[in-house]
Length: 256
Image (cartoon, rainbow, N blue to C red; front, side, top):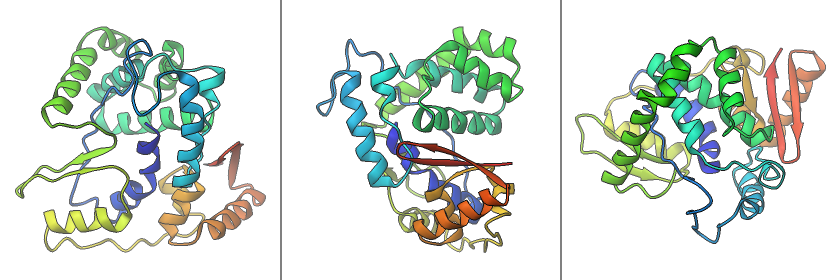
């Protein structure tokens, strides 16, 4: 979902500052089974999503190009969800990278990630065991995805993203895109005494940690303004340290 992309800046910073105290177990919500049965919030056909994504892009200051829904719309969100579960079965850490790449493709590069060839190509790029990947998509990964859907139903999850804590404390369910401070406070409530890691990065070295960043992510990680972040990113591009993928509603910056 587009809001899940909007939450990336906060989660990336939290992982660096409080990563010793929590892990993220990604579950798939199956937001779009098919257009034959989907009708929610005034959205009933692919074209309805285009303007919605453009609005979300401006609101979250993240590059999201809604034109994909006019040019090559996804028929369902189920194929990429199942593909993610297949990679997650092999390697949870690799699955996070796989999910990131899918998000970059669909939100920034207008790539239809419901297509089997796209899902396979990304898996190959990440050196996933492709034979096991294809086998699991028809078998265990599909069952794991169905289990995620059942869990969402049991937990009463109706919107995405939704964060549900697990641990010694009473579980907390937090829905929607929240501020960094809200997530930080949640961690401190769940893990009293958690100590923040002070980030020691500069504009160049942050790309050694995250080789792809949006301007918003760059700004949040370096605690600067969005305009300041864009200026520094252009300086890095002029120094041939990063490459800009410039699209309608923003850019993705890749380490060279």
